[in-house]
Amino acid sequence: MTRSLGDIVFLVLDAWQHRWAIDSESVISVLRRDDWHGAAPLDLGARLGLGAPEAADERIIVVRGPGDAEVPLRAPGRLVLRQLPADAVRPLPAGVRSPTNRELILGVVLAKNERGMLLLDPLGLAPGVQPVQGDAS
Image (cartoon, rainbow, N blue to C red; front, side, top):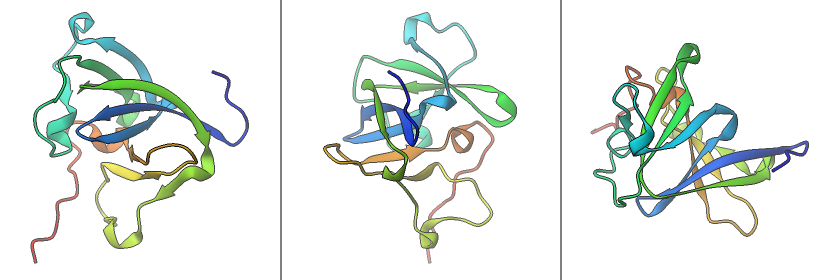
């Protein structure tokens, strides 16, 4: 898949009844669960507050984290690559962003003839990075 000027290639995960996108430039590798022999991968469903995987075909997505650290993520579901225009990415509204904490979700991807996707932040998914918690007030 060639990348044209103004396009972004996303790795798209179809799981938990949603589509999740990661900029492919942040992805180091994708492996079958049985082929992963490194540190215990981070459970993407638990990190996002979505619970146990819904599919048996689990993959390990290794993304570039803080300081170029390799962060392995457990991810169920179907994976595909999508090349979409950069202007399809919309940031989260200011009212739901935290000025002090990293977000798990950077924005949404809304492109013609595509289901919407939530754009994940690999830096926010890394271990030790605290996600923004909802305000109970």
